[in-house]
Image (cartoon, rainbow, N blue to C red):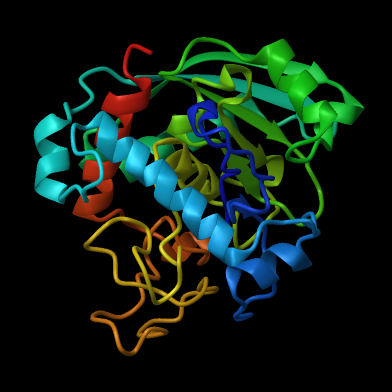
Length: 308
């Protein structure tokens, strides 16, 4: 479970709460099957959300903007066409890690940070994407330590600590509470809110942490997937465009645990992609991105982040 807070480009003159976008990640009970909206409500998200239709419209407009940037306004963009405009990342993404503590609580070790970097590089190796640790800073601030998405404390933290530009990955390690494992921003939001860009993860989700079964570092993998432009595999349920990737089978709702053979959209081809890093299964269950997801990440990088 992990989800990115979707904050859309100002060029769309649209704003959503992180919960409304369906991309803030927090664990529910294993095996619990809820629609994303119901799961978000259980996680304590804001109740004044746009309707499902409004969220779908906003997502459509974001994708239309992406298509327009690729020279395909008003049209769908095939995976082959996306690949033709994308350039593989030839240099590692620079990662700035910000460890937020409350006294000694949350003060993850350098070894855990190194292990998290190893997890990211292993997960993205086949996608021609790599990461290198550029800096680590540590700040004891009790308000920032528990800052939730969209809060004044989150804004203060990020405005004080964020480093680099659109192609630098900032990871904030903290303890936001409310059952949240993490959240992230999407590439298309950087231009309007550069200070906000980055990934927040629960400190105990790092390798060796106490958040079992989410303590092998794949909360970081999942959130970075959002940061590179991926939606959840269950985006949109069984209908519509889903996650805008053609080779991930559609999925009605998040999967938990590791339910091999689960098929929540029986009228659609393929069983649920429970091993995909963009589902909600246990860290031990997750092990892949699809070829289409790799293409989308690199294309989103070229469109919104590379040199921006």
